[in-house]
Amino acid sequence: MKQCAVALLVGLLFGWGLSLSGMTDPARVIGFLDVAGHWDPSLLFVMGGALMVTGVLFRFVLRRSSPFFASEFQLPVNRILSPRLLCGSGLFGVGWGLSGYCPGPALTSLGFGFLNSVIVVCSMLAGFFAHKVIFEQRA
Image: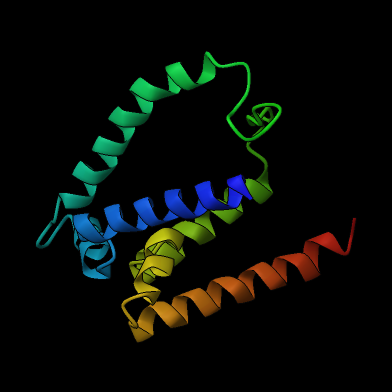
């Protein structure tokens, strides 16, 4: 139960940060990608701020023997760039660039009732289902 409460609080904090920074507006992302037109650097500042906080705090977090609510850290160990990973990353980037939403802001924007965020989230869920049908049934 503690894990769910912490996850909810962290998710609310993340959503609040996205809203406060204006990253729930797809025009910001599209403006960032429009380097030849009216470029909007705000996404760069949000990402830079996140990287600075992560860079400082990550060292302190990994000094712990385990996370607060788990028995061990689950860090990625695979360092191979497979075609499947590259294709998935490419699809993610294309979807983000076309819609202006990545998953976090899309879910946060649902709270504002934006129709385009509903379409993006439904598309993400369809993609999750398609992945399950295509790849997990082979295993």
